[in-house]
Image 1 (cartoon, rainbow over the protein chains, first blue to last red):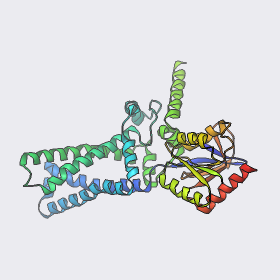
Image 2: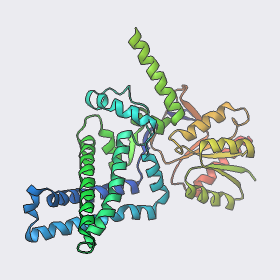
Image 3: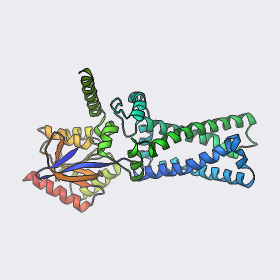
Length: 242
Length: 128
């Protein structure tokens, strides 16, 4: 997109677009820096074959790390809400799924494995995969909070059957969120088509070209993005017909 | 005194800009999205529009500018684009369908004196 200044020879071409605010990026990296030690220490406490590592003083240290990281992990969204309530609500709204996400998820294997992008419906600032990651992390945060606080402070007070269910839900949230985190990590740092995601989370910006192609609803607005996509589909169908 | 429409989805920016402009004696009306801006323009007939680019979506402000250019009642209203878009590069103009004409382009954060000077220039241009 180029903007012409009236009565002057030069025009302005947009190259880089702010995608994440400083607070969003700070929140993302603090979340990562607490999630990783939580996952590692959690798995040591969870998997029987690793539980030998959690004996004696090492065990006390692992529990301490888990609890310190849990406090920061738990407080992070609350602090973010205090500083930027509108932004947090906007983020949550952006994570909510819509009907185009189903088409995106159907087209995702061909895109990620074969690089075929034509079948992907236009997406907003977050694509369906990023939304899934975001929603899993939000749900996991809630479950970790509801189960983790009584597990920490309620041992011996809460009935054993209830405590057992708390542990089961805490572990399930851990398994699901760690799986999602590993997919997210692979796509962010290793997948050859996904370079722009890490750039935008490091520097806050994404290229206009990438936004046009991968986040068309965010770039052009929903109406024009759909028109462009429909035109592309017609063009592809015509090419296929000849 | 001139009437200025401030269009931005950031209420903090709108309130700050409103104070700066009102202190200088301008009448201020506001809108928080492209669609709302066009409705306010048609009703309030502002003398100048301060238009954010990224609102509901990235090109929201530019679409407003494009629509203004096609509307005989709005095409002569000066537009100052106010944006935090980064990496905007000035080039020699090569006119095409994707070009959107605007009177001025200012980056956020805004220096109040610079903003007022640009507004006066744009209004003078309109009067001339």
